[in-house]
Image 1 (cartoon, rainbow, N blue to C red):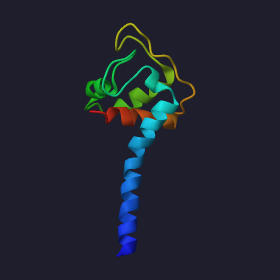
Image 2 (cartoon, one colour):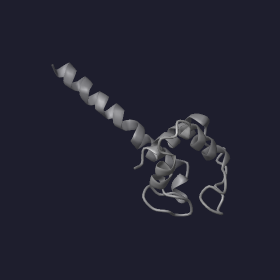
Image 3 (cartoon, rainbow, N blue to C red):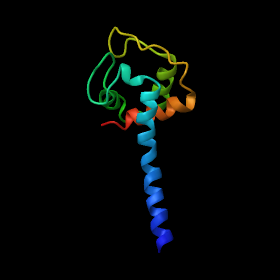
Image 4 (spheres, rainbow, N blue to C red):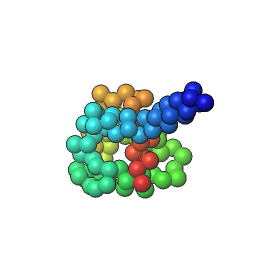
Length: 102
């Protein structure tokens, strides 16, 4: 029984890790200099991004690409710079996390 409880606790911690890790990754990659979860800074809030791309099957791929390569015109005149220091896997993790912010 103790083993089962320990396994359940570990599984719970691991399932919460991606959201936490993504917030920490966003901080580490300096995303939070221009974005916030719930308000517009230089760029849109993550909640606004999640709303805009909700229901789009290719949203993770689109956002991951934009995270790495940058872009302009979607949210106004201020361009998002490229982030070559973000790997493809990190970009997918960040995009998935951004899309979960509702």
